[in-house]
Image (cartoon, rainbow, N blue to C red; front, side, top):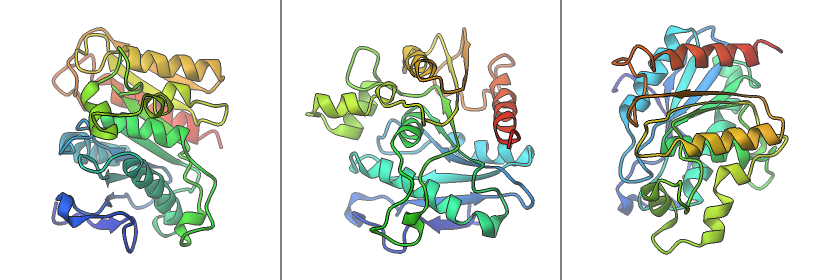
Length: 266
């Protein structure tokens, strides 16, 4: 990890509190020289007190093997509640797009990928974005809209029978406002301008019900947003690359094909 370049999201991170025990949010650089596509990877961890490295570094390195650049986002969680994680994700998209000229990937070929609670954060990033702001620095003037969403056994809906309650409580607090939970249930936020999405999960997931993925796919379908959905019959939660399961591990190749299909069209 010491050889991986860390890029801070801000020169001075807003709302950062060192007393909360986390590093400042940053990007870990896994870019590939000559790559024209880039993926921002958001590990899971239930918005609790960790980010799962096997859903970060290993994923970024796998994209590199396919000639695709990647950054792993170390976002804030745990004692940091909404909207801080979303602000980190939005800023990451802006910054990656802002740096495109320096790295060589195209500014309109930037995907955001998330696993589990990181999948929820990626899903909020594809539904809650803006085309640029004038109240910050030069990076803030850049659009925060990802060009693709890649959602891996994602938490999608909050505060109801299909939710992952740990993610809901960790993001919103134990006494959360039901209306905020409804707003951040990403199936309710999909519009015609939501970018295309790739979604995969397992029907046997007993941590994050597969209904989360189905709700997102249904919302995308209703808004006529292109999407690809893969539901595997068996497999635990948190499989990441799923190298121990020959069936489920096919998801990554399918995902790369989706990325290339969408990005090579223009």
